[in-house]
Amino acid sequence: MNTIARILPYTHVARLEIERRYFASINAVESHAAADAIHSALVELGVSFEGRGLPVSLRPTILSASEIDYAAWDLGVIRQLLNRVLELAVADLRAGQKNTPILNFFDFYRPWFQIISQEVRSHDHIMLMRYDAVRDSAGDFRVMEPNAACPGGVIHCAYIREAWSQTTLGQALLRDTRIIDRECDSPDGLIRLLYNISPRTSAPRIALCNYKGFFNNELSSLVRRNDLLRAQGLVDGELVICDIREISVVDGRAMVGGRQIDVIYNKIDQLMVNPSDPEISGWIKASELESCEFLNSLAALYLGEAESIFAALHDDEIRASIGATPEEIEIINRRIPRTRMMVGRSSSPTYSELAEDRHRLVVKADALTRGAGVHVGKLETSNSWGSALLNLARSNAIIQDVLDVPQREAVLFDSDEAGAIGKLYTEYWGVDFFFYGEMFAGVVGRAHSSMIFNVGNGGMEVPTFVID
Image 1 (cartoon, helix red, strand yellow):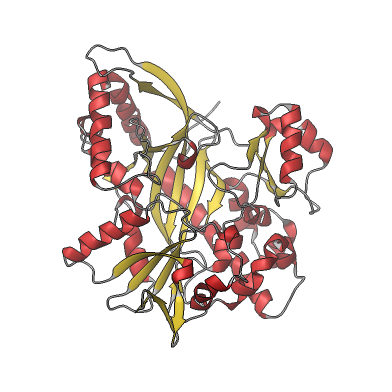
Image 2: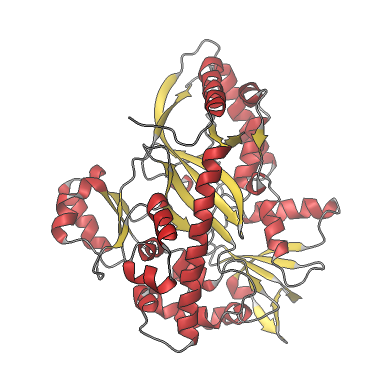
């Protein structure tokens, strides 16, 4: 029998009551009014997904503090383990090693090893972390993949949550409910993190970096929010958007537009970066300065973002290398489904296992985003599964035990006329856990008609609330 774990009975009742209110009160007029109000609020804020309207589900996700806090504690331990993997890799590189267990495991990323080894940091490798998770059939949250490069959801989800809460629908559903707010529930949360890691405390200047026009999502929103905070006298720093090719180093200071920058937030496709390209030499030199801090390290950008880092946490040799304790291994197994390199390791599956057990497996390219390169065996034919395996064999692919992604029902109205009858539809839903440094920063939600859900690939943002 499926169970919902670690939820106090009265909290479970409160959650069921909010879900009951949703189905009892939703109607065509209310639905379209809420959707229009959210759209207008986001347009006024200049919020979009790379120029497109940001789709938002009207059905909220309601979670209990007890279940979230239990999962977050485990994920905090996993963050520490990921940092240990990255620290060991950097230590081996700086020692001039070439063939240690950790470096051989991440051999795919050897072209970037030199710039990784040269970076100077005063903070942990991973300061901004998002785990993409779902609740399994036993009621526990399990993580499908890490996001240690440039995770989305750092400001838009807070705006969506606020806009939904101010609708008549949102107020009716959440009345008399105690909501627990955390750092990612505020549009100022990431901005505070950026200022907190700055080497310069007075009027710091933060560069929000893209590369060749990719991954601009949320950068303009962060700048506008910071400008508002400056106008109100709440901050004295500046956020600027630039391409990494615009960064230079002059007299030991990183510069953009002739002015010093103190922190660099890389919102880039890291695999597009050729470390030998002279156009990015300033960006590389900036990573070597004590006066300029990358939000997440280059090691995090490449190794920490890779799907294969979860395979590393499941690999006996790597576990021994980082000194993982039995308690830590138990947490890994509890929160991360078994993840293996598709080829090249003693734990890699045989061809017969891949062919015969595809219904319980998913194959993923190591470093693609937005659902690209992900194939769920039970959704594939034997022929398409075989083709996917052949194509991904060259992409440092990983094999992961497939999770039973939960589904739920929501209501859709084709018309805004009073009395219009709604249609029930089914969507998959998930929860993303954020960490700002060591601090658990909260959760956001997403939904999709497909098991491979991603807002950049047709999914929806979901207003998400944790209740006491």
